[in-house]
Image 1 (tube, protein in one colour):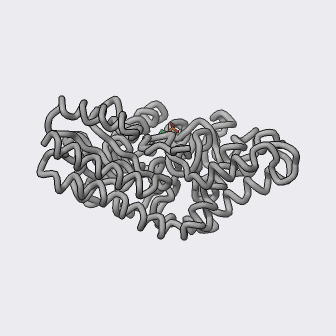
Image 2 (cartoon, rainbow, N blue to C red; image 1 turned 120 degrees about the horizontal axis):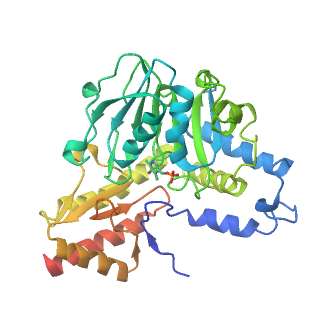
Length: 360
Ligand SMILES: *Cc1c(COP(=O)(O)O)cnc(C)c1O
């Protein structure tokens, strides 16, 4: 068996050890005579998996006790609606920093619920940077400030987080668990699992307990954080297999030495590719400004668009999967989440150098 060089943006690479563990346990989970997928979500075996995933998140991200962890469905995209429905009160204004397509989508949903304000934006420069903290302007009566910690499509990432006197909410779908976090600075953190946490189908919400339960009672039951918080995310059937896979990924992160060790590995992996871009004398052009570069999504163009097509084609033939930029902006993108091994980055770097030798 040969594993692909998988640079998919999401769903994306999972650790081989995790896949093998899941394979081993697939038809008989802990002597139950059935798969995790076949267990009742009310069984003690499933409950242990569910609670272990929560416990590991608390431990790995050092989440304080005054935060709850919820396992929801509907992807990060459903959070774009749930956040204003639950946390934006009459007379308040939802504040958003626009740093890419996902934050724009989040804002679009908030506008349907109530008043909004754009606190800062990188749109005029094709979202190639993260705004400086001093340029973030909160509105009057701000309910919260929403940011996107890593911009999956444009390849930029927040390095320091704003400190504001309203709840800071972050979409961390594409960089959660990639580095240590000052969780206590946030009111809420959320992430679809399919980039750094596991397969698609489960969305992790980390929310400060005092923010739960203030919503209008008429919003749909399934869209209230309080519904899920009160029932340990077992109000209805949760995505049990996804949560099981999440628990395995979290065990793997722990075995790697935790998020600090993962961060170090991520820094090394990203440097391999950014160094290749910087050493290419303009043959490869990075999209993000240097101080805003993402460690998760390395976005670049070739100076010649015909050559870019050829680059992507040849890369594909050589077994590099997922290097096309997002369909909205084109170009090239290497997504190098936690589970992408360093060897894949080295192989891509070598290919980039070789391609430039032949065509530069
Ligand atoms: C992938 C992604 C999303 C979309 O997540 P879904 O789970 O597909 O709804 C939202 N935000 C960011 C930053 C992403 O990378």
